[in-house]
Length: 636
Image (cartoon, rainbow, N blue to C red):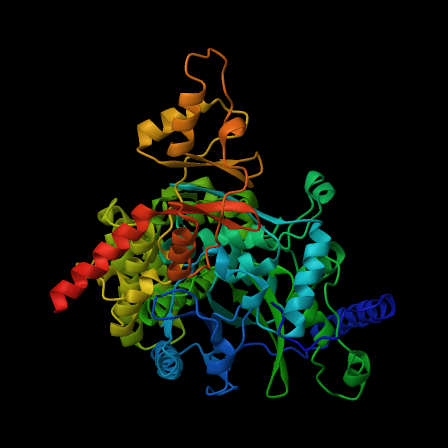
């Protein structure tokens, strides 16, 4: 999300003034490039670290603002969600011990955050998507209460013309609707920046597009979303869909999404991207105009180009062009946004070293990537890497097809090593960080593969919520040791779960793998479901997932006795309880027990906004009671 200060919801006059200033910024940048105002000949690198905040049950904790009260504002800032935090690293020149320095800087910042978080019973998790996230965490109450976020949400919802949809297929299939942009908050990343000169920008940007696929394949760390196993880097699919502001008619005519890889190579200048994005995407937010950039140039002053930067912050290319000013000098950067947060600081710095090494080496090896690579192949490689990680196959120079892990080990890692050597990066840094990446690829143990293998190893043990909590706990424990992911043991369910917090709310113990019927189904189907699946309650929903009734074993027995001998089929709608007592996922377990005892019922359908999301029964409470009793007996 854009970080600039913005105005309140803009009227037409404000929007027109903003667009006028936006166009003036583009003209100013064009003049600055022509007249040599942009810094050249310097290679600087930098990064932004996003992270999740979790409570003692390892669920998202809306604690960002409280942490920020005690953290340095120069290094930490907000993100869209209150359960996210962002830390910004100082830029470094690409030489010497820059990667060791980057690791030290990252560790210092994360240690600061962990220390403050611990004082508030909160922990830090580095991962692309938090395994314990649920839709209940994605309401507007979890949005950071800053005007720009709410304004962006309101405008995007209006432009979308309805709910945001996500449909992603992997090992499992996820289809979900959401009424705000908070699905985007499921993603956290490790964004790396690379400063390049204006005359070489097109060449270097196109190269960044080419190497994005192997970089991502080696760094995937987001295989699950809402307890579904999806892509190796599910962030790519989710981010694209969660910020899709296109109305249906724009979808039908193939308009580009705000989150994209792009459609073609650029030919000459960074201006091509800025102009294309301004032409395609309406300004979502505005800011009060600052001094005219052309007037500033005339006075010999370097303009900030705030309107251009603000608009650019709401167009989400995976490789984003950036303009900035540092120490009074204007510069251009490529912001690589594809890498997820984690699994560890060492892994993140290894990914960065791989990216920068490839950028240096391949810019010499490939004079013009547009003559060696099809853009469509580069884009397809990117999607394949996101879906399959190191199992992907990619088309490389001159159309040769590679297994991506083989390409990395045989071609790209040696090239990256030569590139870092060429800019005088310390040999120790090269050996350390490229060695980590080589070990990860050789063992096929990315963060995503570790997570998927861990879940496979746990099989059907325990409940799904317990398995994803165990996965998150293993992440936290391993990240605190700092050892890279290829050395981690697989996550396992604990033999003894000490946390009573695991049973505090209905969402933590309800069943979500549901068998349901419709009102116009025959009762025989409901009876058969009960027999086959050993059920005593079957919810009745309509075609849109809304709960409209409940079939109980007792109700079926009464129907059987009343209609004995009749050949006429009876529908579910005739015998179901039409107004069953329900609860929400946030209902406390104790309140759910009280409700069931008071009303002498043996189950509660769990609903959110009228839609069925789970069910809780006496058997679930029996299981919880048995677990707590066993723990008490062991401790007594």
